[in-house]
Image (cartoon, rainbow, N blue to C red; front, side):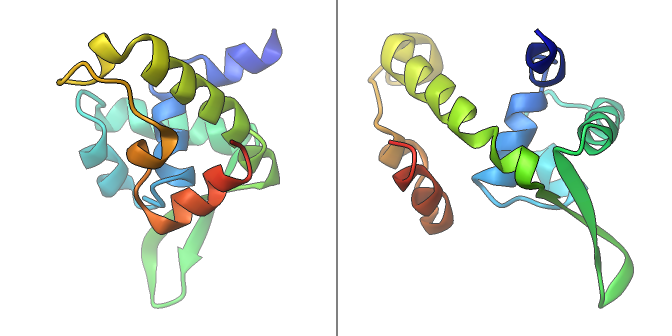
Length: 123
């Protein structure tokens, strides 16, 4: 399956989660938000996702050195897939996923108002 070749690489879904749901759009902020992710691997994944037209870099008009990342239409189409995987994991693997081992609803996981707006369309 081609889609698993693209989306199944280590860290990719977490990067999409941060860009798509958490609205983390800067390289260093993504790096800080995902423990264990290295700058080299993040750079590779961003290039791959951009090459696959899942994300795009958006220059900041105030500072040309600042690059922000956003999902393309194709990238936004990955969000329902990601939502289902998150829902599955939080329901069936809560003991592994959460420190208190208690299942969570998507509203509990995504507290950001923008993320809640996104999930409202997929739940």
